[in-house]
Amino acid sequence: MILARTVRLNYSCPNDPNKIDFGNVAAELLKLIAIMIIRQIVLINVMMIQIKLILENMVVALQTLTAIKDNTPNCFDKCPDDPNKIIYEECGCGVANTDSDKDNTLDCFDSCPNDSNKIEPGKCGCGIVDSECCKFTNSIGMAY
Ligand SMILES: [Ca+2]
Ligand SMILES: [Ca+2]
Ligand SMILES: [Ca+2]
Image 1 (cartoon, rainbow, N blue to C red):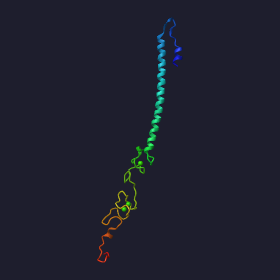
Image 2 (cartoon, helix red, strand yellow; image 1 turned 120 degrees about the vertical axis):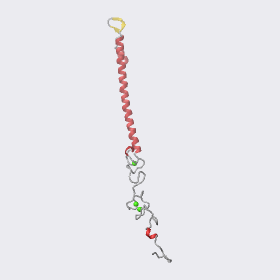
Image 3 (tube, rainbow, N blue to C red; image 1 turned 90 degrees about the horizontal axis):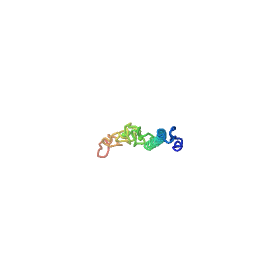
Image 4 (cartoon, rainbow, N blue to C red; image 1 turned 135 degrees about the vertical axis):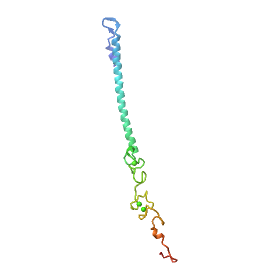
């Protein structure tokens, strides 16, 4: 490209064949430099677009990796380390909101999670009705 344009340069002054018109040469060189700079800028823009695409793909890949099982990117996930929750619920992240004995008290608040009659061990402990263990027995073992 430069050679092709150089061939077309008119180095001589039209009125004096012994002199070179440096004004024309400088202008032509400036044009060539400008064209080269524009080409470099275009190339840089293309590279920037490609880098932007690569970075966008990396962000998507990272979001996919960190979404765990709930398919929620961590930026929208209040429990990023808990694959079962995306919001902070009663029992918090990492703890299931389970009510094993169906007494309407979640296991995380139920000290007797397998006793539907108690949420605290009370006097007799979980699984035993308090009035049952507090009965007095007579000498032959009869409750009264
Ligand atoms: Ca989560
Ligand atoms: Ca319960
Ligand atoms: Ca219970």
